[in-house]
Image (cartoon, rainbow, N blue to C red; front, side):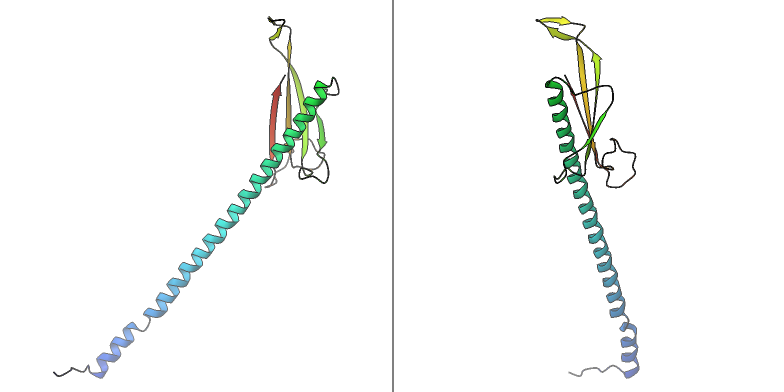
Length: 159
């Protein structure tokens, strides 16, 4: 069997046509890998930001609970809880809640209570509201801020 040999000009033309394919493929792969890298970095950054916001939210909730416990203790011990004006205090330094401030407000609302088994329309209800936030230390909550990491939680109790 005789093998047929391509003539020299035809062989050159075929090589010349396929010489840029590797370069185009390499550029395409680099662009795709760069896009995947950018997507991975942005996804990681978004997840980290969400984790930080979630942690701050949990701390704000615990700060609000601490403020509510203080308000209930003060009220049930017979004094110190004044509904005349809001009370704002910073949580203890050195704790994980030290960046938070709690503001306690209360309001007496007329309602129906039970006295000696009978409904008493003269009984008053007390609504205690505690708002905890990570605004400026000592500043009342809610704080007038537009910070991206501002967190606020509110708890209400009715006695």
